[in-house]
Length: 129
Image (cartoon, rainbow, N blue to C red; front, side):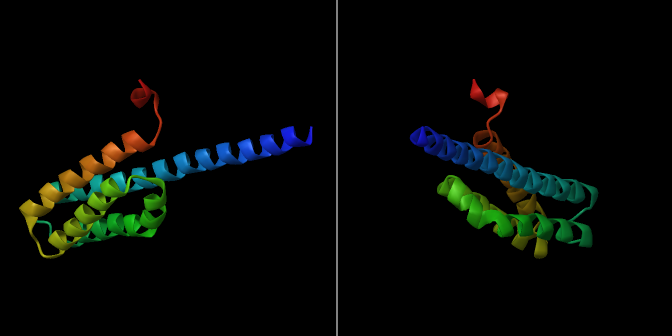
């Protein structure tokens, strides 16, 4: 009976850890995706990327990534996450120096990567079959 209780506790801890990972990663990727979508809307609204709104939104989205990237690196594919890191750092630099066309391209790449990670990392009925 003791062994059954120990095994049950270990199993419950593993399930709890898996649920936490799913909730954490989906929340962070959703925040980043919403932040990047707001940057895209801001760029579309203005002629160039060097304006207060776009710079602030870009900094905010990159800050969310920076705060969570170490944990995400523990939970996800390093190669893909390094690519996302590179694209977000490049996007921030391009926005700050007003490389409008390059920033738009980098933003689209970052959005697609984060969306792909969201679909791969978070189990959903649409990506199970």
